[in-house]
Length: 557
Image (cartoon, rainbow, N blue to C red; front, side, top):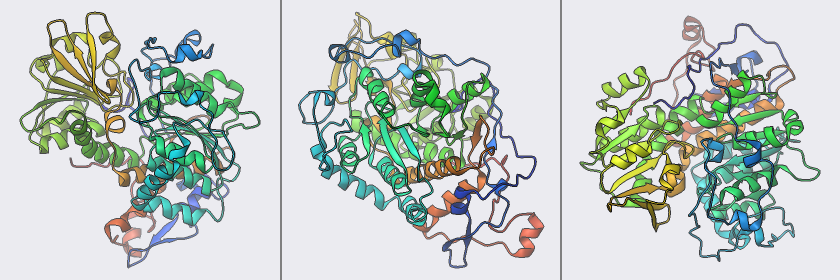
C-alpha cells in the first residue's frame, strides 16, 4: 500500500495563467540568489507572484468523509471518574484512535492527572495544562540542543522577525510536542503570532518541553500518557478560550480540524488557512473539499517535496531501527520482516532493515510501488503468504485493518507488530481487547498479548506511531518539515483575498526549493549557477523554480 490514501491518485494541477496580484509576503522570504561562494542572499522578488502561488490539486476521492457520531465524541465532556476509567469505546475512525486502556507516563511524578493540579508559571499565569511546570528548565535545555541542528529555521526566524509577517495571527496547533516542535512554535511567536498548542499523539509529548513552552507563555495542553478523554479535552481547551478566536490551524492528523469543524462551525468559517502535514489529515481535507464542506483554504504540506522526500523517507530510515531497538533489543540480522506499504515511509524502513541483514518482504496495492520494490530487491507478497514465518510486521500505509485479528492469530510466538503510520487504525488492536487474550505490560510502550495456548505477540505503542512514541527522530530532518510549515503559514496568512479558494493546495515549488537551500550550508554544499545563456536555453529563471510542478523527484534508498 502506498502512503497516499483514496481510491484515486492525488494529481498536480499546474497553473494555466499568470496571476497578477499584490506582493506575496512569504514569497519575499523565499526569493533568493546564490552567490559564487554559495551564500544564500535574500532579495526582492523579480518574478510574478503567480510563480509562488500554491498549486491546486485534483481530489478524486470517492468515499464521503465519515466522522465519529456526535453522540459518541462531541455531545458531552467526561467526568473525572470517566476520564480515568480503563474502559473505552473503540471506533474505526482515526479520530478515535488515541484511546489507551493501559497507558502511563515514564515520569517519576505522582499519578495525579494534570487536569486535577493547580499550576502557575513564573509569570503568574495558569493558562496551560502540563505534567509538571517545575521541569521547564530541563525542557529549555532540550530545546537549546534541538536549535543546534535546526539552523535553517533559526535563520528564517532572524530574517523575518523584524517585519513580523504573522502579526495578528492566532494559531492553534495540534502536533507532536517535542523539542523540535518547540523551536517551530517559538519561531512563530517571534514572527508575531499568538499560539495555543496541544498534542496529536498521546505518547509522543516530551513533558519537560511542554513545561518549557508553558513557562514562556505559550498555552500548552498536553502530557505524555493522556487518556482518550484527556486528548479531546486538551484540544477543546486550546480552542475554547474566552476572547480568543483562532484564525490559523496547523494540524497533524486532522483531529484539530475535525473538532473545530464539528464543534465550532461558526469559528471554522473564520479560519484563514489550514496547514496539514500528515497523510491522514490531508485525506480528510480532500474529502471535505469534495463534499463542498471545506470553507477555508488549506495547504497540503505532506505532499510537498521537502516533507515527503526527506521527512517521510530519511527520518523513518533512521528512526525505525531506533524504535525497535529501544523497545525490544531485537537483533535484525537474519530476521524476516514484512513492511506493509512501499511509499516513502516504507522505502525508508525497508532500506534500513535490509542494510542490517534482515530478510525483507513488502506488501503493496499499487503496481508502480510494487515494481519499485521489486527493482530495489524486495519480494512483493501478500501478507497471508508469509504471516506464519515472519518475525516482525511493520505497517506504514495510512489505511485501516492492514493487519487483522485472523492474521495476528496465525503469527508465531515472539513476533513483533508495530506501526509507522500516523494513527493506530492499521493494526486491528481493538480485536485484541477480548477476554480470552491477556495483556501484560513489559515496559513502557511494550505489551505482550498472550493467547490461551501461551503464544505471545509483542505489540509496540498499542499500534500507534512507533518512532515518536518509543524513541526519537532526527532533528535535522524535522527542521526541514518545520521550515516548510512556517512558510506555508506565512503564505496563507498574508495571501491577498482571492488567491486561494476553498480548496486544498500544494506548497509552491519555489518555497520547496527555498527550504532546501536553507539547509545546504550545513553540508557546505555549493550550488552551481546557471549562466544567462544556459538559463535562456532551458527557459528558466536563474533563481528558480528549476523544476515544473509535475516533476517527480526520485530518491534512492
